[in-house]
Each structure stands twice: as structure tokens, then as C-alpha cells.
Length: 276
Image (cartoon, rainbow, N blue to C red; front, side):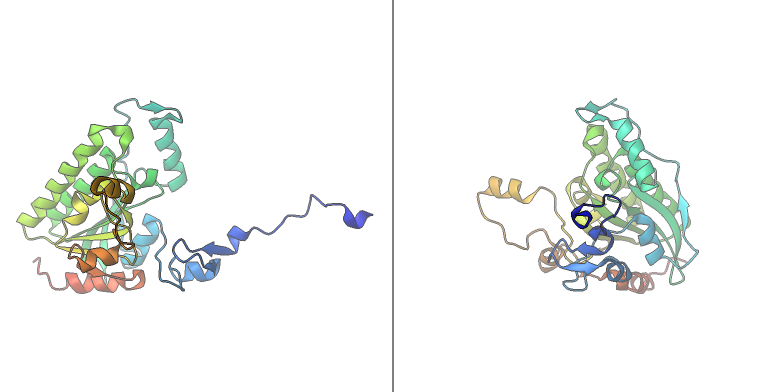
């Protein structure tokens, strides 16, 4: 009868550690293969999320990336509290979880030998939402690029404005756009890279202001949600609406670039600029 007694000490293998399920085609990809392919589905080419530091390692030459403004983080100016607790507790928890102080990592380095400044958003931190700290780091990145005459690249990955900061969050749209506008006046290139997802106030501000707007394949890019738009206009939207491919076809995006090709594509674009 001992054969039929369940041994609680035996641990079942975790499927999460072996397989990754693609969010687009639902294929199960071996975890090792998924990571080796830069979190991109080998079946349908859907680009999964990566951390801001992983993206920095992919884009910048080895050992060249230097973080800037790491001390800037969220401030609970409104003393916001909801049913799930305080905003302060939430962002402190996200700091520990993501290992960064805000929803964006800002720094400078070399891309195939070309100097550049970049702000890389991280969806793990409160959904990559645009808070006052996020906007400040993006603005300071633009100011650094302006001062040192270096091209500026922003990788957007965001659910939009950070509602816990109210109108202070919405003010970041104007603040970041003004920073980008200063670069434009001095003919310093600003390149916007939109990854999945880029929505809300981020799309409505700096994310669409690039001299060149680039997107990763199948990235969701838009302002309001599909359901809100359909209810407003009373019509059914196309299946590919608010995808990178749809925006490319309609002129809102200049190119769709695979993650593995992004570094070379960016350095090729930047090689056309003379910032001396």
C-alpha cells in the first residue's frame, strides 16, 4: 500500500522554469531557447519584454554604458492612498523588485563606437508609467545630450501616465517634449524606439517626436484603448489596429527593426549625423 501513498517531499518540476508561452501565438518555447533568442519568439517573431539593463547591454558597446541620474526617483507629493495601500509603499516595493529607482534607466555610452545618450523605460516598474521622476530623468538625459552634443535615444515601454501622481504626471508630457524640442533647435538627433507596449501619455508626447521613430515587431502603440475607441466612434477597428505594422503602413512609424538588429540599425542611422 506504500506505493499509493503520496510522498509530499517529492517536488514536481516547475513548468515555468522549462517553458515560456508566447503571448502572441501561444507557442511553448524552451526557456533556454527563448533567452538565447533575446526573449523573441522563434515561431512568430513576437518580441517579449526585457529589462532596461538587458537592453542597455544589447545596444551599447561592452563596458561603455555609464548610468546617469540614478538617484532620481518617485516622490509621493499627493500622499496618495487607495484600497491596495499607499503609493509610497508601492514604489518602494517596485524599487526592490526591479533594482532601479524609477521606470527609466538613463545613461550614455558608445553604440558601435558612436557616442550617444539613452533613456530606457522598464515596464517592471509600475508598468513603465510616466511619473515626475520618470519625466525628470528623461529631461535630464535630453539636457545632457544637449550639453555634450550627443544624439539622444529613448526606448519607450509604458502603460501611460502614473495616475497616483495626478496632474503632476500629466505635466511630464510637456516637460519632456520641451527637452526634446531643445535638441531639435540645435540639430541634435533624437531617435524614438517604441517597444511593446507604448501607450497613453507617453505616445502622446516624446515617444512620437523622434526625428526617426522606430518600433519593434508587433509592438502595441496607441493612446486610448481599443474598446474606448470603438465605443466612441461606433465602429469595429481592424485586427492589426495600434500595432507597429499598422502604424508603419499609415506613416506614423519610419521602420520596424528586430531586436537583434537594433544596435547596428541605430549606429548606421547615427553615422549620417555630423555633430562636430
